[in-house]
Image (cartoon, rainbow over all chains, first blue to last red; front, side, top):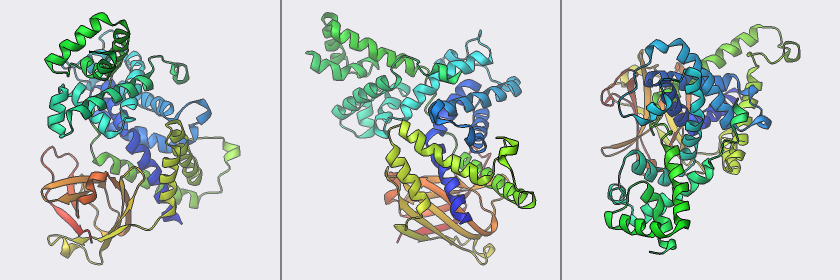
Length: 184
Length: 253
């Protein structure tokens, strides 16, 4: 029985990790600007999820929103403790440049990450085939034809997937931040 | 070009991914069509939002195993403390950070179906989770044997990998290893599905050494035709190529 329960705990945490670790890691990298700190953040966030799961109240918001709050809290702690270890923003890194505006303090930087979180979650909710075309097109800078050649997927299908992915992202993001009051 | 032909191309147009000839045709249409221009503006908002997306990089594979190991260690520590203490009165002490392990278990279980409902995948997620608890019969059981280099150091060893399909096409792999040595300091084990020169990682883990180690890992559907399983020992701080140090090996029946 104990083995079964232990397996259940691990399975639940494992499932949560599979679903959210890329977002926690990605948003953490944006906030902290340091890959090793972001790795530390991922560890601390999921351990905190495990230790503090009783504080999650589904009537107050979604699990994703709760997890963002946990991530934000841990990121702020790490930011304050290790501020001296932050690296400068690399030239031309638009992601970092937006988040790490020189006028923004740690709180502001972290607050701006809510949209980053939502975009990341919207991308993660795409199925793998649609996410792939967006990653190759947007982050990889490939044309539709180049994506077709790279993946072996017919050009028409690449175009359809791109259009469909944008439609899903548009719907998911909805361009109104109704959840902001929940996370304050 | 008509609107019905332009609409499916607008996302690629916004991304700058159309061929030059196609781009010109779309631009000509946009110049005379306010409806498509409005649609274009909506898609540009998606593009602007994507500027805030974190780079699409997953965390390193070993992290998951490390987190689960720490949870296991905390669980063990909590269990031993609970056995040596008076019964814990939750009502008297309030909801402090110290929560009985069975309560934690229940709460963690609640999270999955709740968030899944929000994500409109409740049935699938619940099915997956219940599936974990039910311990369904595996579709394949692979015997893992020590590779020649390690054979002498693993007396009394046995190990199997049980594979169970998951609703999303993933495969869950449960490793049951007996008397499998702990990894060396600053190292961890990694399970691979191998086909020829290609390999897919199923994740990383550690071992308790003496006694039974049970680990749950997952591999994507693409690993279905990878018939060889390898457990390698990897260095946590290594930035070099993957380790060739195979500790265990198994072949699909």
